[in-house]
Length: 241
Image (cartoon, rainbow, N blue to C red; front, side):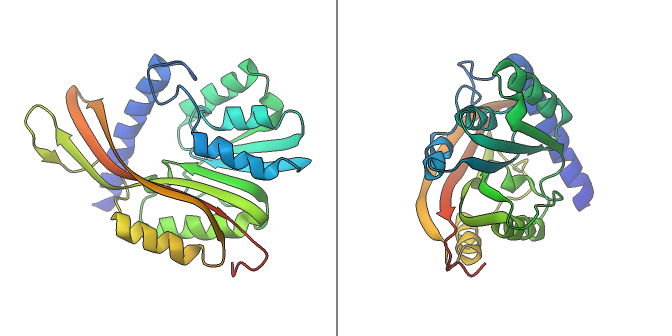
């Protein structure tokens, strides 16, 4: 059953992320929480002249990107709306926002990003880092992209980082496992979907990197392989969306 598959995957993801959030502090060396994504922060330069910047971080976690974005907006007006499925992540995000003095710039929403409603023409900057592949179906993926596109203001920027072609290998036995990911698109199909969705937008930056990670799941050492696509686009006045 599809529902039970998604439920199992999300329970494993919850255990993995909860363990990471407990064992590593935000911006502490030793994990992927140690620093924000450079591309995400670089794209903020498009809003240097803005007096107010509305940001949406889909799949924010504990604030790896949203806390530094909020810090960058402190000298001007701005808000970072943070959406995540895990209550534990948002609890820690709020605590970190207090710690880093940006509580006033952070707004949290507990939601599956596949079900979160994005109001049209609302955000200057929408960020989704390793989160869109966690929606429950290709149809949900398309719906979220539709909402992201419609929710972006003219001259706004979208920064999407999506994993595709995922493989999981048991490092002890060499056995290839079924990847515990909700949506495992081929890289070619992912490219096609994004290019179709963003017709008329300016492509600011895109790159594809093959990445490997060693993770532990239920006492097993797993080698995770993925194609990581970064896709940064800007909505211009001629965009068909």
